[in-house]
Amino acid sequence: MQPPSFANRFEFFESIDSTNAELRRRYLAAPAEWPDFSVIAAGEQTAGRGRLERGWISEPGTSLALSVLLRPSKDALPWLSLTAGLAVAAAIRELAPGAALSIKWPNDVLLGAKKLSGVLAEIIAADAVVLGIGINLRPQLNAPETATALSEHGIELEFGELASMLLATLRSRYLQLDTAAGRVALRQELRQQLGTLGQRVRAELPDGSAIEGLASDLDDQGRLIILSPEPRVLAAGDVWHLRN
Ligand code: BT5
Image (tube, rainbow, N blue to C red; front, top):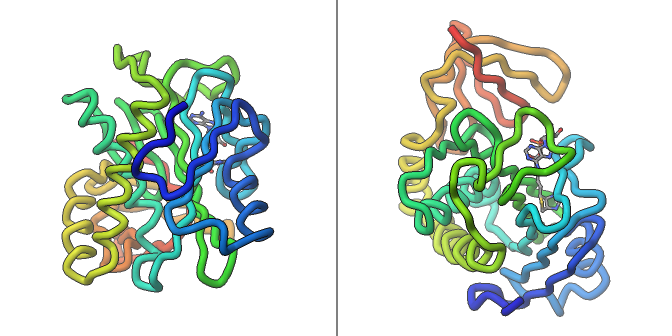
């Protein structure tokens, strides 16, 4: 496929184990050859990865999988996953206005009530992060019940057009993260699009404990505030939206 103009370096694989794993290997072998906003994309991942050693299904011809090399500032770092979610939603809306997208803290984009896209941000060196994004274009044989795809909602997009638009929307928001004013604006945008806010949620913390309560706000570092009923601040973990 044509390299998208928004990537500073771009490599496409028909099939690979994981675009995050490949970018990490290639970067660590020759860091100087991988500028900020280098991209590795693939038509299929045989060992796609989610968070916490979970898997990510990307069967041939059904999904967009790409990883971007970033060197974020310390202030930008906590915002990367949520910013990627915003960029995914913005890219799809550009190409398919009116799509019923929402962002679920900390790293999902939902279409309707199901998961369309996931983000995996991994720190691979003192100054480098690999930001991996998966988006389902068409249904997959082995995807979980909780997954959905654009075509299931009548949205037919091709890999190349979505990849180009995604890199454009991601790049502009990534640049916004460099300034305090930009981060304030992103936080505002996220507060409007974060379907998690205002919901009763159950959150599982990285240490295995759980809390339930009302997801009330996003703090100034992208953490989720849950009223349980006393405020608890969640920096990482999994969240389920509960039905009242
Ligand atoms: C994620 O993890 O959602 C992060 C997914 C990141 C995928 C991208 S693709 C490009 C790059 N290269 C990689 O190897 N990874 C990144 P998490 O929140 O832990 O969610 C994982 C869970 O989502 C799984 O345990 C399944 O339940 C579910 N899942 C797996 N494949 C899915 C799919 N295609 N669509 C929706 N849900 C899926």
